[in-house]
Image: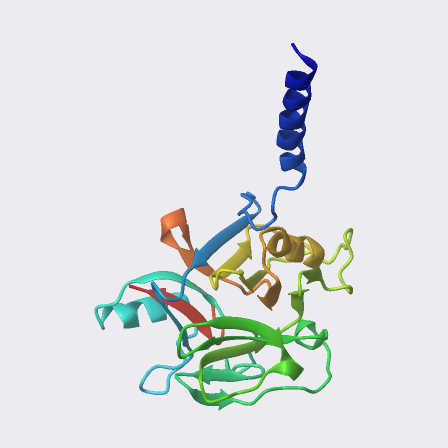
Length: 242
């Protein structure tokens, strides 16, 4: 082997090895700890539900599923969309079909919702999506759906500093993240997990911003992955239909 050929060979090997170390983190990472559903909101309908036309709370995914079937719609994914009060009303901001049904909450208090900063997940009328800090949210009249929850999990690519790697605060958790290609990533843990590990999963999959939705009351319906939870008694439900 000539010296020139040897140098080229070494450069090629180095490039291949270097590629392994700089593998981009926005590639979906399979992890058996989580149920993950990624969707392009411009291809399927993503809507928020709280009450039916009679003013009755849906309360769980089973009730929503049956209601949709009566209207010739198929629910392909569902999850609870944020925290709620004792009467099943949304805790914090809630916008449905451009109508604000609950006011934004910027006060202080106890519990996960008030672990600052909290945030807002919203979908605009043009189907662009975003997750922002509560204090940064502006309703420009083009917000079709919005739900406030907390805490934020990932902010501008960084895990919330309040989370600790070895925390023993374990719970079932569900949340939502926004990917750079305007896709939504919904995640629910299959087992109890701490906030840091949950946030890390969003970050490692490329979400620049991610928001915690709720904990042990969380339910997710995703029949394509044989994950069917339709019980519960909560507030807002995020559903995807076709």
